[in-house]
Length: 241
Image (cartoon, rainbow, N blue to C red):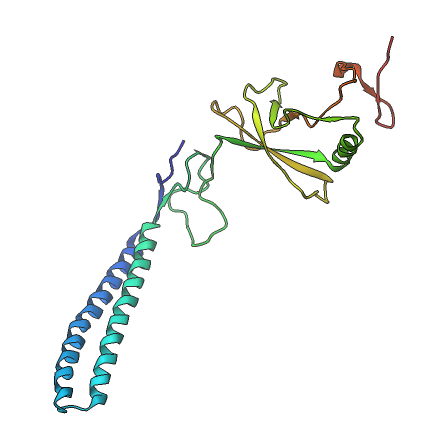
């Protein structure tokens, strides 16, 4: 478990320290020119009043002083950029969560904007569960709701999970949203639910079965699932004695 801001890796700082030192020297050099140009502008402001110098020389002194000030601002920006690069030599956790195995070892080459991550941090509290629902089932459900053969579920916001071993997840989840787009490749709609995960039973990539109430049929007979079989066309069949 890592916390946001926790140092994870350190990149060789030597070239970045050199860049910061060079930027600081450039700022100091630019600031040194500020005093000289400001003093020249003050002297010329007095001399131009008695016509000891031309107005063009005075305007040139003002322009020079402004350029020196702009140069100081530019060098300060470069210094800040160099300091940011130096800060980034310490790679910190951007979020709090559980970190996986390190994908690099000491001495590995790290480049700016590289595709391969150094490690992956995942926040598993709370946990998002994406459930695909067939667009055909969704259409059938809506038609039944419109026809009145089904009543809308009264507690459709709650979702239960059944884990891979068949056990029921002890925490109930909340339905967050249902995607309005049907995946053309799978013909399904994605429904997302949010579950608390205090004991870290749910892990990224795990397969689970979700149960949520989308409609209620009041005059139906509920039977055990194991008593239902399928014929050759895939239709559900049960025997009644």
